[in-house]
Structures are given as structure tokens and as C-alpha cells.
Amino acid sequence: MKNKKAYKGWTKLGFILASAGVLAVALLLVVLIEFLILAVGIVGRDEILNSGVFWVLIFALVSMIIGLTMATIIGRLFINPFNKIINGLHNLSDGDFSCRLELGKKGVMREFSDTFNTLASELERTEILRSDFVNGFSHELKTPIASVSSLVHLLKNEDLPKEKRQKYLEVIEEEINRISGMTTNILNLSKIETQNILTDTAKINVSEQIRTCVLMLEKLWEKKNLNLVVDFDEHYATINEDMFKQVWLNLLDNAIKFSDPNTDLKIEILSEGNEVKVGITNHGVTIDKEDYDKIFQKFYRADKIKKDGNGIGLSIVKHIVELHGGKITVDSEKGETTFTVTLLKKIS
Image (cartoon, rainbow, N blue to C red; front, side):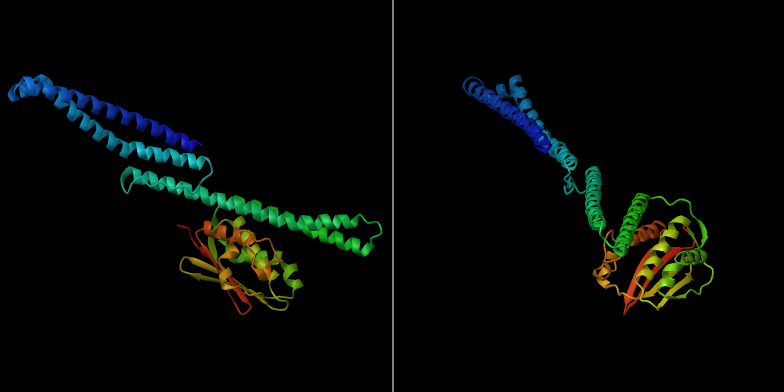
């Protein structure tokens, strides 16, 4: 509705200007015809040229032509672009983020078009992310909530055996912990996604930090009887210590979770120039190459691993690493998967 009103407003202005122009032309033609009739019948050529009325009419004609030309130019240069700008802004306010402006190929109008289109693209991307986030989060919550609700209903049965009652309570506890973990991860991800400036960085012993994280997960890798291969020197990098604690815990937890029992869990740390590379390798599920990029998206889980996790951990890892100016890659083949994190020893 707002776009139509704006368009009608400029249309009325154009109609008024056009009507005024037509009226002026009509009056001028009437005066010219009268003057010619009088001039031909009464006075000669020299007298016509010397007549003040003649030169007034010439001046009026020239002024009208110049005025119409300027009005056309001004309309094309200013009125039409402003009309497009107003309609574009109304489209954005109405939630249509797909609109784009083309106001010119150079100068201020080109700059304004690029700025407007960039804004519209960012808003469109944000809307898509918001929609995906809401849909993904609601979908992920639906399963554990439905499971808890069903088990609570079963627990109301007074004749339920003690063993089953205990088992159901354990499952409920697991699902509640899952919801709690998902909520914590989402809050962490939201915080990291909105952070553009890296703060609280220091020169940290990456090797020592990883050893600490390995010890924190000791019960998990001992339960699977994994053989830890952790032979590396001391390496340092400029990082936010708390953030990278999340990175190592997420990667190690995933590596343990998707490892086959009685296999190796290998951690390598190498220094190359201004970079420190950390590789975590496990043996178990193979990730398909077409999923390499997708696994870092929120709520995405490959078909082979859908029963585990909530698809948020790797997204957090990727955001933290990239916030530090680093990168993370994955390579998976024949049951051996390696996640490699590349960090800068010193952030410039």
C-alpha cells in the first residue's frame, strides 16, 4: 500500500507538470496565430521584426522549450530516482528484502545503489538465518520434549515395575541434559555470532590447554578403551583462552563419540611459520565429501550421525576459529577422520 501511495504521489506531480506544459503551449500557439494574422494583414516584415511583442513571444517560446527540457532532465535525474528510492525503502519496511535498486552506473547514485543493495542483501540473509534458526531449534526441541512427555505418562502407571521405572527416569534425565546442553550451545553460538571484535586474547600454551581438555574427557575415552596418541612439544598462539577451551572440548568430544571402540585417538600439533596447526584424528564413521562444508552449519547432521549431537557444536567451533583469523578443515576417508585447526601464533 505504501509503495502505491508513493507512486501515485509522483504520478500526480507529473500530471500537473504535464498539464501546465500543455496549457502553456496552447496559449502560446493562440497568441502566435493571432499575431501572424495581424502581421500578415496589416504590417510588413521589418515592422514585425521591430515589434516588441514579437520578441516577447520569441522569448516565451524559447523559455518554454528550455523549461520543458530542464523539467524532463530534472525528472529523469532526480524525481525518478527518488521515486525508486522511496519505493525501495517501503519494500524493506514491508519485509520484502529481495528488492534491489539500479540508479546509475557511476557517481553518487551508483554508491547509493550499492549501499542500499548491500543492506537489502544483509537483511535478506539475516531473515533466512533467523527462519532457519527458529525452524531448526523448534525441530530439535520437539523430539526430546515428546520423549519426556511420553515417559512421564508411562511413569503414572502405579503397576510399572521398579526396573522399568528406573530406566525411564534415566532416559528422562538424559533428555533433559540434552535440552540443557542444546540451550547452552545456542546461547554460546548467539553470543559468538554477534561478536565482531576479538577481546581478552593472550599468548596461550595450546599444548597444555589440549592436555587439560583430554583429562576432562577421560571417562569418555576410557569407556571406549581408546588409545590416546598425544606426543607433541609445547606450542603457543594468541587466542581467547575460554573460547578455545570450547573448541578443543567440542572437537575432542566429537572425536570420542564417533570413534569405534579400541581404536586410536591421535592429536598432533605442528608449527609452520606464524601458524600453529592442531590435528585431531579418530577412527570410526566416515564423513562424505559433500558434507564437509555442511557439518559446520547450524543444526546440520549427516545421515550417518543423526542419532548423536544437535548440530551446533561444530558451528560454534568454526565461528570461534574464524573470529581469531584462523580456519578449520576436515578430511575423512576409509574410516579415518581428521579435523585440522590452523591458528596464528601472533594476530597482526
